[in-house]
Structure formats: structure tokens, C-alpha cells
Image (tube, rainbow, N blue to C red):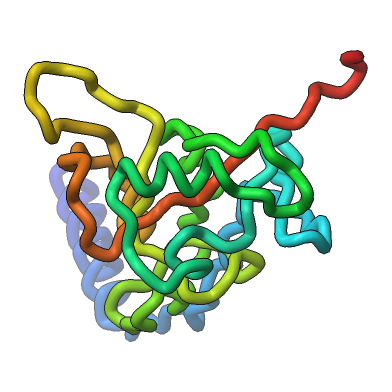
Length: 185
């Protein structure tokens, strides 16, 4: 009985040594398919884009692409109130989560105003070139501090930040308007 155990152990060890002695050849690496965008934009041909899932219409040009300069929050609010793009007059400042509906982490486009290759925007090329890096939102925090605060959406990383209302470094606003829901009057 003892001899059978030794024979089995020796056979197992020889098999293990032989198996490890064979070189392993890995299969060739095949890159995964690129991720699919969850953002579905339709160019309306009038300076606007419609995101079909959210039923929001966006100005194709943001304020930086339109005016060639940064706007503080007060200027951004006035810009949106006076915007007439596509023949519409009901433009508004978006909420940060609405910016998230057009933030597209499958895109890396060098389309900011300074075309910095180290700061690609996660934004569809259907939007106009010359864009701001971050955008003001309607999420205004009214308080006793004279210059505080609102949330902004940063299109390089997809993160939201709080900024002072007078801040104006590489930022702007991308106007949005609501579309009527299908089936409503």
C-alpha cells in the first residue's frame, strides 16, 4: 500500500514538473471595442442640438465660443436671458445634473478655446469649437456672503465645483431649454 502512495506522489510530481516545463504562449491581445456613447444628439440645423433621451435642447455654441471671452455668473445669467439662438427666447441656465446629460466620457475632443491637448473636453464634436472648460449652473446659493456661490460643471473631468459668482477663468455657460414632452399640449 505504501508503494502505491509513493508511486502516485512521484507520478504527480513528475506531471507537475513536466507541465511547468512547457512554455506558455498567451493568445494575442485583442483590444476591446470602444465604449458606446450614451449621449444622443440631433443637429437641428439652427444653432441648436437636441438630446433625444432627455428632451433638452442645447445651444451649439457656448458663451465662450460665441463671445470669445469668459463670463462671470452675473454675465452668464444675462447672456442666457438675452439669447435668441434658433429663434427661441426661453433659454435658461442648466442645473449641474443636466450638464451631466451631455458630458460624454467616451469623447476626448480638443475643442476648448485654447485647444490645449492636455485638457480634452468630454463633449461631442457636434458642439461648436472654442468652448469653455467649465460652465455656470442655475444652482445659486443665496446667502449673506456677497460673492458666494454657485455650482459649476467641469468638462475635462466631469466633476462639479462651487465657485464665487465673480470668478471668470476659462468658464462660460451653455444655454439649455426644455422641449415639450411628447403627447402634451
